[in-house]
Length: 143
Image 1 (cartoon, rainbow, N blue to C red):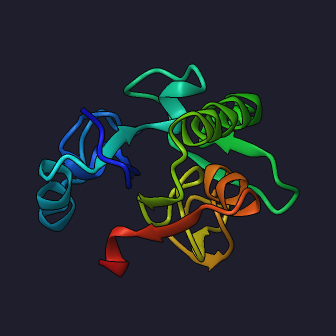
Image 2: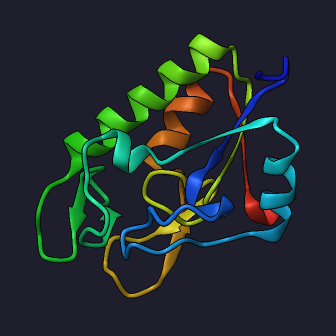
Image 3: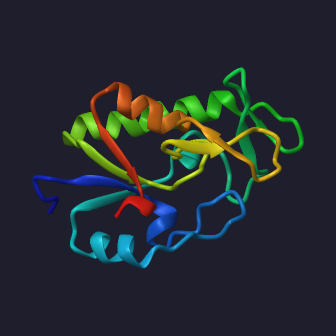
């Protein structure tokens, strides 16, 4: 049964192999919180129809999301963000802990779109959707 203060958490942070490279990015702190039963794991990129593994993608200056090979996956990222927001609305979720630097989940800093590892100020697509709808977003680095 879900607790009344249910929150979202990036699935990769709790040990689910859903990242672009087919791996997880386990955070022991996040896993400990998840085990308390207050979090629902999500992967917006999978919700948007992308496979795992998949080509790495980064947000471009014009807002599009392109893979390293040049494929445009903007539509998938938007669908994933909308589906994530739907989950929040249905379950009255007001908080999320999402994966830092991600083109979907990044909060405050994301990769710059050049696949060089350089970070710029900004939010991932899902984080931006959630924030615009009054949902507080943190990253694993904030806990």
